[in-house]
Amino acid sequence: MGLRTNALAVARDERLPTVSLLGARITALDERQIVAFFCKEIAAGRGGWIFTMNLDHLRRFVKGPVREQCHRLATIITPDGMPLLWASRLQGTPVPDRVSGADLILSMTAAAARRNYSIFLIGGNGGAAEATAATLRQMHPGLRIAGINSAWFEADGSSPAMDALVDELRRTRPDLVFVGIGSPKSERITERLRASVGAVMPSTWWIGVGISFSFLSGQIPRAPHWMQRSGLEWVHRLCQEPRRLAKRYLVDGLPFAVTLFARSWLRRWRPPSPHEE
Image 1: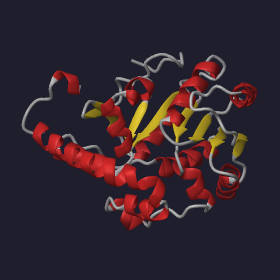
Image 2: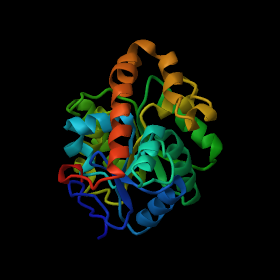
Image 3: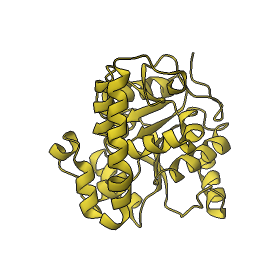
């Protein structure tokens, strides 16, 4: 089944291999395969939405709010976090690798630059999107940047700034849109934008990249590679923003990770119940 160009249609593509973690659909492709799929689809005039799911997203998915918001509509859902990678291995359905928004913004921009596709940056802290655009241009001379919009939006996307952004997107018609806004606000805004501009931008791809603009702009240093690969990137982030992230990581995240690993290990030895699929 091919991708539907209607932005409100269910975007699941049966051609893509998937695994289930606590009922969440995770696309079993590595970064290189995702970029290749993006290039093939956009060349065929088909757009899509990439959602990078980390442990906190999965926790909220299990609670319910994220399920309808993005799980139903996303074309690709990547495992953005080593705990998801480890859980997939524990239950005997391993995904190839961790695929983060901070990595995809680089690899997908490189692919866009090679094919003369345009990109659009939405969100980011003060000046981060502009600095990220400058960094990407330096890496890829000639990169087409259709626009940058760092306006503040209401959580439900209702504001005059959103109307102005819709008009700007319709005018510039970018091929690839990076949304540098935190979750779940990012999903709500992306869903609204896709519904508003999908008719004139059917081949556009959207990806939520969270705090990646701050990483690329140098505003916030990213964890060293060894911490990323060992599953300790959260410790690095906690040290950077303890007041904001302590509850998410220590109160909510760690107990949920234990639950995830336990249920994944148990699933290895028994079929999933219907509500888990």
